[in-house]
Every structure is written in structure tokens, then in C-alpha cells.
Image (tube, rainbow, N blue to C red; front, side):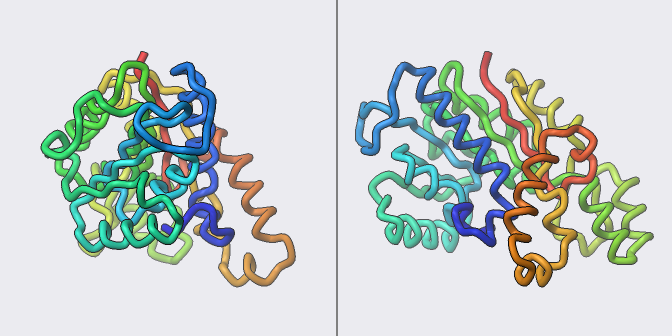
Length: 262
């Protein structure tokens, strides 16, 4: 995934980015602050954001551009090195901190109850125990904090395999408890929207919104988007229009859940 502010990459990130940006704005208002450009301890309009599994900063750097402080926890030293470089290039190195760690040992490196917003993007597919990983993410929130969860969707994988002519693999993914299409599947686990919202609610949060992500983007030939005038913008608008409709959650490549502590 690339920087969500770059036009071509926005096909994969635009829906989540817009929802997240709005959530950050609401959180700023909820804690009685008015947005301000600078960062620093106690600065008005500045939130503390934890990005678990944030890798090279696909969301962390744009969040820092809004003026917030972001802590990225990721197990990959290479990803954290790329994060440091990207943050420096974006001029937000003073607002982004990368720490090596993972969701299960989160509080070895991050503060319990210390963050206004926690991102848990692309994590639950890969951890041994998604429920525990999610509980840790929730425990990192301050009272009335906001959690953003992004995970692989089952329906999108089934549809993609079927459209590629791999019908047996599509059926396997549909029947497999983890949503995997075979031994060569690089994703260990996928979720339906019901499974993901149940996990979030079981962790003690109230689900505010569910969005289908990359409903069409992964199915449309890239050459069409790159060569047809205005195709990219039209596809972005289509993705945004379909994202909140439950009928399309079942075929989305990814699912996004936004939730809050009551």
C-alpha cells in the first residue's frame, strides 16, 4: 500500500483515509481542542495516535501531516527504516516514532491507555490470536478513544479467485474456517463483516461504522484506469458510494471498522 495522498494509490486507501481523517477531526473536537498545525507536548489540536503494524508509514505519515503525534509499532526493521525515511522526506520526523514490536507484546513497547486513536490495519489477518491482538489494541486507548480496524475480507478473495478461473480455490476459500484458498495463499486469515464486528464488540467497543474497501479497484484492469480520461476519479467516487452499503461488504477485498470506547 502506498501513501494515501498519491492519486493512483488512493484507489486502495481513499475510503479508509477519508473515514480516518473525519474520525481524527471528531476526536480533536471531543477532547475540547481546536485543530492547530504544530505538534508538541500538550499542543492544542494534537492527538496521540498508535499505529500497530504500521510498517513504512502508509497511514502514519499522512496522520502526522495533520499535526498529530504517531507511534508506529511493527516487527519489521526494514519497514521501520522505510518509515523513518518517509517521515523525514515528508517533514514530520519529529512527530513520528517507530518501535520494533508486535500486537501480542504491545505493552512491552507502548503505553497502556495512552492513545486517543489506535490503528490496527493489516494485523488481525496475521496474528496467532486475533481476539487477543484486538484486546491489546483496545487496552492502548484512552477513555472514549477511537479504534480503526482494517482486515482482509473473505468475499473479495472468493470473487477474485473465481474471476481468475480458479473455481476450486474460490470454493475452498468459501468453505475454509480461515478463508484461505489453499496452501499457497499468502494471507493466513480473512473475515466477514459479521466476524470482524463481533470481534470488535467482544473487545468492549461500540461499532460506529463498517466500510467495504476495494470493492471494485482490484477487479478493474489497471490499463483502463490509467488510460481512460477521468476514470480514476470516477472509480474513486464509485468506491466511496459503495463503501457504506452492506450489500457490498460481502465482496470487498478489505473491511474497515471504526469503533469507539463507550
